[in-house]
Image (cartoon, rainbow over all chains, first blue to last red; front, side, top):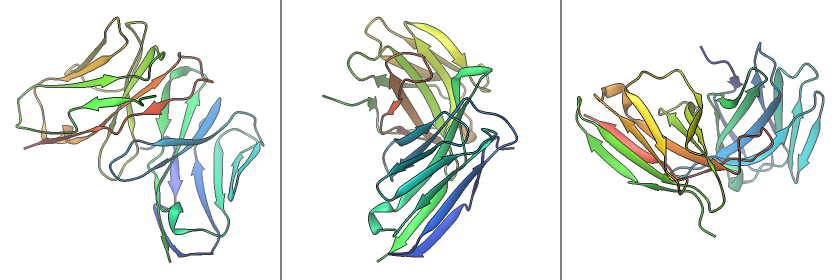
Length: 112
Length: 114
């Protein structure tokens, strides 16, 4: 059983469309991160959110941490082919700060 | 500056064999973490080392062990390999163990167990 559930698992959309990826848990996290991973490479950190209700923007990407610190979302506006990749959410719990728990990932494909 | 490096990039072993994977952190980083990423899943935490001491351990059997050297590089050892150990093994380095420290991942070692 995954502690962090991501949805959808796969998403294929046309260039220019908007999309939202969700990361949900029944556990509370001290912080939550989003990574993007491309084939043959390790994950690359996009953002860290630490405050319940926090919203962070990175160009066309908007990240939100749930008020209860149990969930997060990633919204991409006007998706581009360069956004293609595996998006992973990862959280740290108060009880185990050294252990990062990853979600199962959302594989995103943007069609030109 | 060089990022996190891992060797080898690919490895093929047979069941029952032993394997050693290597990781060199970013210069100045004292913490190294290891993750296992099975195809189609997110990475799973195996170990974290800081200043040569184990600071965290995930839910992996004792067949998995690791160590960190004085130069902060690290090795991950897996004994008595099983088919299910086939995965991408990722190493990540950070300045310390504080939650605010960003982890930088290497490209991984792809292990195939036949």
